[in-house]
Picture 1: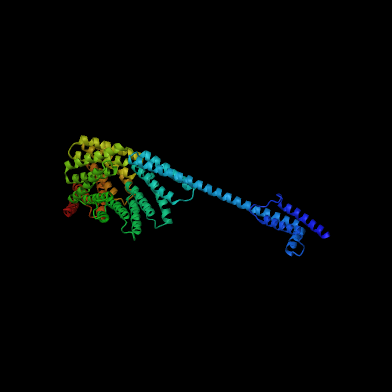
Picture 2: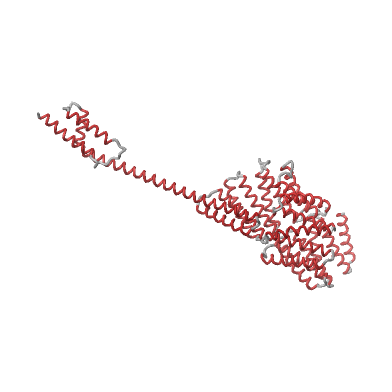
Length: 586
């Protein structure tokens, strides 16, 4: 009987314990099956007790004893373990939430940058459209906005190579517009920034051909700024840097037509510098090498428009060199070949500004060659056609200073041939217009050497006209102003042969004026300085027929002066030297 009562008590205690574990007050995670396992064991033991099981069932009994003696501790430990697991779970959940939020934020930033870059591209394309329509002020506005967006992206986001590459392209286009406006300092700033950006990309990956080409283009454009300003030594350095980089890049890429095109362009640019420096044989070497590249680009160099334009530019450059060497018949031959290609290309796209400019420059060259040959009628025809083209360009975009300069050059050349024909009244109108426009350009940017040199030409032309009109006082004022400008330019860059030659022209004019006034001593000073410079130039490049002719004139001037001074023996030496040079030219 006591055994039954004992079992009854055990059963009641176990039932209470089972109910306690099953109570919701014990907060265990739903995915943890420990509670269910425990309840299963308790239920099993309760069933055994109810069926009269005794201590012989050791496994059940030990489990029951453990529960009865350590149940409270077990429950406490179970609660601690459960809280710990819940805390870890909460931390993991929070970490996942934070990670998700960070990823979402990053994705949002990526989308925002992508949207900003898309706006930048749209602005860039808008700028291109305005530029094609020659609305350069609007194009400049769009490019600047695109550049500002890129600047913000590079400032706020991670460094993106695509952003930097886009930056170099836009900077170059802004530089080109500034060049058109004659803002050479501003243009140089844009090109230098483009060079720095391209250099940063090349440092990251020197095998990236596109990035290397960006850097090469920047070199050439910086050289173009120096060339337009008449700083030929500096221009030469940048062009040589471009050529050197191209040669390195072309190793293993000999068949890359784009790189070959770039090389031919850089060689032509260097050839133009050599022409300005009076190194005509060296210039011819550069142009002939460029011509070989153009010929090799295709079995038919006239097939591709870009190659056809390369061909006409190469032919034009060779014609310029031949003209300067005094080989006028050959110069006409190459000029005509170049002109035919230019006319064909313009006929295929009559609204293309670049092709119109190409034809205009060749027409001007042909006018100059015919003028030197004495074919004044043909010369006037070419100059008038050239003026018509440039005048139309100025009408399209009056902001473009280069075209204004070209129009002034056309007026000056037409004035020259009209003066030769004795039509001084019409020549004066053209000279005066050119002089006024060039004064305005120099006022706008007094640091521009090219504009200053052009102003000197106009001052000399107007001075010559005043001399022919018997207005010596006005002529002297004009000559003296021009002489001052040329001295300043030669002081700035003594290696510029073109400026030195121009200085001799101003010196000779002042000498002639002083001689006409009977002031022989002063005239001698001017003539001696001019003769010294011309000897130096001819010694530098004996192939320059133009310089040799100028030297002959300087020798004759000094010889005439010596005769007037009664120094006949000295005069005869000078006359003989002039005759020998003339025989060489024949």
